[in-house]
Image (tube, rainbow, N blue to C red; front, side, top):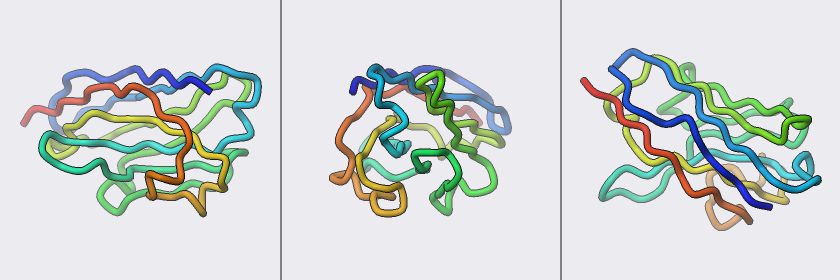
Length: 125
């Protein structure tokens, strides 16, 4: 599985962005997906995860109520809609895929099998 993240950019605080993560392969729906982010000088952190069928979603407390993860299995794509962005959301955002259930993998990086290359999100104050 190859993952390609896109949609990052520069936005003012309070604005919105939608990230996309396109995956190759015919088994896209077999993988739960996650989004992580990494700001300069910090460790990569969990943002959100979604189950294989897209029914179950999980969020870090810091983004709950502002970010929405979704997926379109027919399009082999997972999305992260980010609203009410804050300067502290500035980071490189990575998508990841896991053979585990989303509830099992959650925010544990080593439980994800495939990673995309990352897309930069910068929120100005």
